[in-house]
Image (cartoon, rainbow, N blue to C red; front, side, top):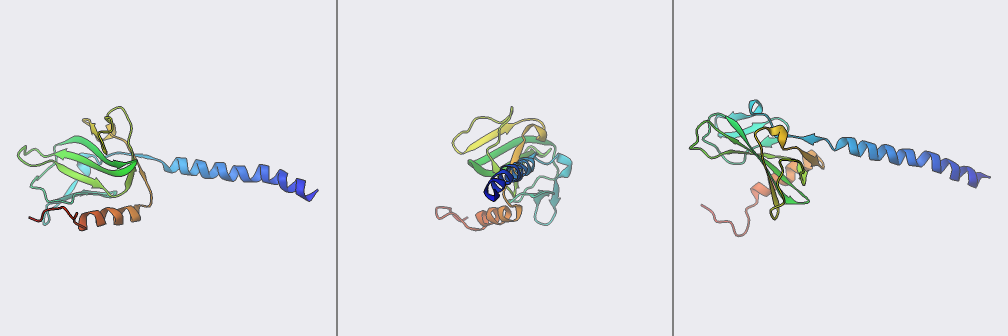
Length: 159
């Protein structure tokens, strides 16, 4: 009798926990967007740009302001990094390239192009047109991304 009671309880009690876990994981898969222009700030000493939520540039920029969103680019293989590109009012400067500090799944959506061999582009006028899903632990992702920028590639030329 105890064996049957155990089987009955396990059928009714264990699956809801599994369903609840699956629901929680699904709710955690929230879509994100590149920051709006108004959220970007420049450090006047380093000339680097950033935005709250884990966005920053890894190169200096001569741009003094941000005029428009150009689009986004994802680089990776199933999981990768995401960059958002912005243009200054000074057309003689390079675009501002913000990198997200979380790992990101392959993005999909109306404005995301096809996979071009390890990267996808989203050319759109608004950051909300290029949604993506971040994965993993934010702290670990930031550590991983920072290590990519501090360790030079063996074939990299030093200038």
